[in-house]
Amino acid sequence: MQYRFNVENYSLEKTLLSGQAFRWDRKGDEFVGIIGKSILSARQLENGIIIEVLSGDISKQEIEKYFNINYAYEEMLKVLSKDALMARTLKSMTGYRILHQDPSETLFSFIDSANNSIVNIRKQIEKLSELFGEKFTDEYYAFPSIEKLATLNEDEIRCAGVGFRGKYMIQTAKRILTGDLLNELNREDSKIAHEKLTELPGVGDKIADCVLLFAYNRYERVPIDVWTRKVFCKFYGCTPKAKYEDLQNLAYDLYGEYAGYAFSYLFEAMRMGLI
DNA sequence: ACCCAGGCTAGGA
DNA sequence: TCCTAGCATGGG
Image (cartoon, rainbow, N blue to C red):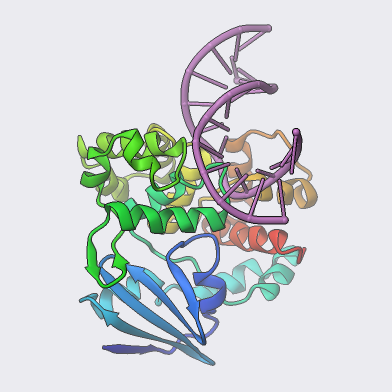
């Protein structure tokens, strides 16, 4: 099955190969990725994208949700462009979008991101899936289930190369299975959701916000890492050791419901030396 | 041999 | 409340 979405300003390269998702690869002029137990191919058009389901039974609706096809992107551009710094940053990264990924996969992927490099995270997630995920077709494995992660011991999970983060994944998996946290977060205010996420082992302020931004469509949340702090220092007069919550509030005062989008652009631009 | 990577935790000031 | 050593692993 193949779907064509006519959307302006949707860059597959910027979106799928950025640091928000880890299971997409460029294969020639297309991008191939895994969502749940489906394999998808994405191709860039001038005024849209084509998504082909290579394997699996993912629905059109689920694809629209994952890619956030109906997000009011133009409105976001319009509002943020009133700010001079944002206007030029947006232009340098046009088409970067925030996806709506699976909460569990996003959570465990970003627990793996602590003091890690994107290249390593990608390798480790593939290895985790190979070792502990369901094999749904030749060479392709789903991301491990929470139940499976909860049964592992530290030695087993370390075979995926995740190092000290393995024990956090196991502990967090066990904790989640005692309740329904990941679903409950949908109904929580963002600040409460952030607090609850940081109670999980291996999840601090920054990783909690990655999960909220990339898996719960909380576009007002800003994952504040070393690069984001550089942005705050260089353009907003902050000091290097400003408190996380203070920076978070400043971002919201500046850009409100678009703060997460704004700083995702600033993050990408800063990392690539564009600003 | 070092240093760094989309940080977090525990322990002490 | 603030500060930092240590953390596994891979790559420069």
